[in-house]
Figure 1 (cartoon, rainbow, N blue to C red):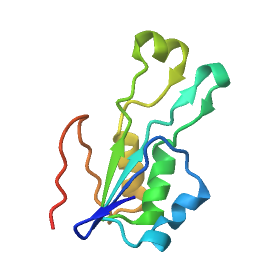
Figure 2 (figure 1 turned 45 degrees about the vertical axis):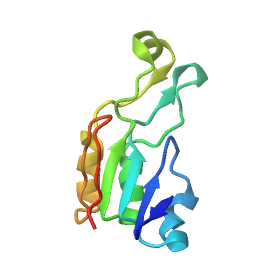
Figure 3 (figure 1 turned 180 degrees about the horizontal axis):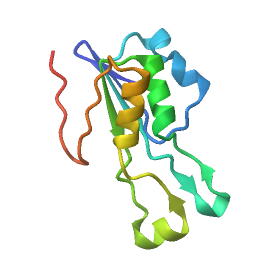
Figure 4 (figure 1 turned 180 degrees about the vertical axis):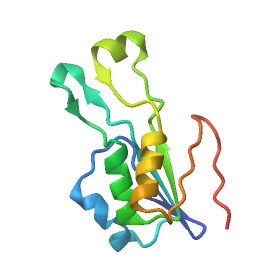
Length: 123
């Protein structure tokens, strides 16, 4: 959670959907922005073990948190050509999250930003 200037932002980093995340707004209040990983990253050498939430899980969390704005992240993650072929597997398209969020929580806007693109949260 990042708070300041009357704004609150939740940056999920690389995380799975765990029950405690659904209680963030109970503990910290309403969210202006939720930045959620959506790539469903899996580690091939660990039996394709999922280590990051996927688009559907991120949309479920969006529905639970009801931020004023949801932003998918980590969809552009790459382990490089060889790393992606041998070690990791992930969804590199934010569209499944956009679609799932619209289906589960149509009143929460979703904004897809490119890696490195700035975001300003207006007052």
